[in-house]
Length: 119
Image (cartoon, rainbow, N blue to C red; front, side, top):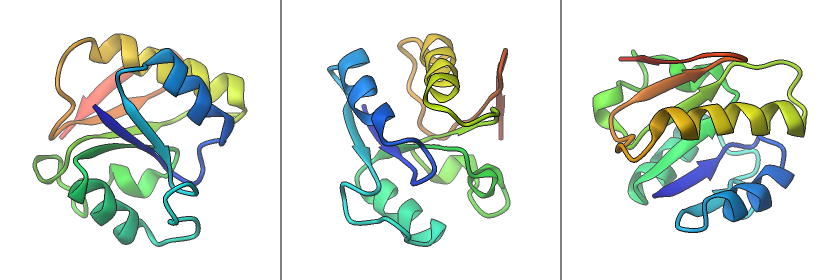
């Protein structure tokens, strides 16, 4: 699986996630030259590479703009504060929820205690 971490995800999460899921290709928007890019550009980049977007940005959870059937997956983290520890715990919840299933066409809303799907 390929994962693109949005610009609002703390950069240290990149190395942690690569270690946590060594079979995944994990990239951060700043590593691929998309720092400061608009959401539409980030979305297009992720789709061209079949990547799941992991973000704190609620815009990616707008199913009118990004219908789940049109993408390779979005994990929208709804946690606060957005410290490395809190974000890491949210991603752990998402990974546990996801298991071995394919995230394609699915929108995940990851809270402090729950994961739910929208679409």
